[in-house]
Length: 332
Ligand SMILES: [Zn+2]
Ligand SMILES: [Zn+2]
Image (cartoon, rainbow, N blue to C red; front, side, top):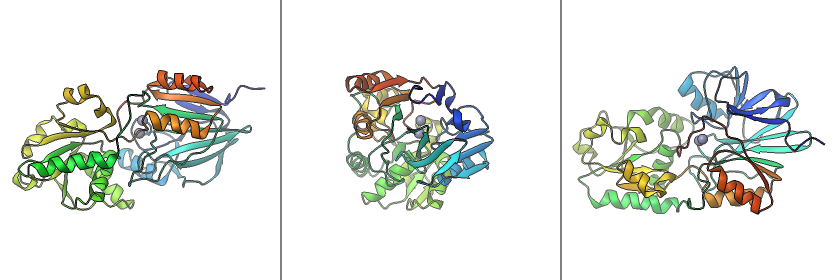
């Protein structure tokens, strides 16, 4: 009998599904690509044909121009070559999907990036029991336990209200994190306008078009310094220590990322207000998900593979590192 999952071949540039002659999240241009979500390390331009959710295709359209895309709705079943495929929500960012592959009586789930906690900007992760679970492990160490998101947002609001002469500048990735922080603020009753850096504008507009309302947003470019005092400003992390921030009224620099658990990391980037808000599963989410899906094997795409592999071994689950390249370590 063939080895479990022998029809799935990991290469450094992505996962190749042989009986479909298709790749998952390839980092190089391929004839057929199945794309889990819109982050740049998973969704690249230049593929001949792309299968992805309508939201992911729209995000890729904003970044790379129109795709020769096959929109796939969550739960829709289709076939590529000899493989039955469906996309189910991954709870990571808008449009993010796990890819479920069935062939030769085996079911393989490729998680892409995922998280289990609630996110008002996207559909929640849907557990699909499987033979092989191909998972990320960005925060695959027991030290990574993300706190409740609401309490982090409360810390942000508390800091904002403490000094109305200053603004709070929040570093957040332009795709997903920025919109999540904004909607979480709205949920906690923050109705004031939120200012944004030009780099997050297009994706905020796209989220709005796709039905995620962000409330009143204003561009920093057209705003006077005094006008932004007492307000929240959202910018990509790269802009935090940039000349651009000089236009802001004495900003308190914050950053929303799972990496903010590591104090040293916050200090190195001059972050005064570290907010532990992550779009990736933490240690408990990773291990609880594996328990829940009860796969026969776990394959780990990227992140801190060692600890998760060890955990699997202790729990009598065969585990394997795939060593894919080009997947970033950022909390995107
Ligand atoms: Zn991602
Ligand atoms: Zn990723």
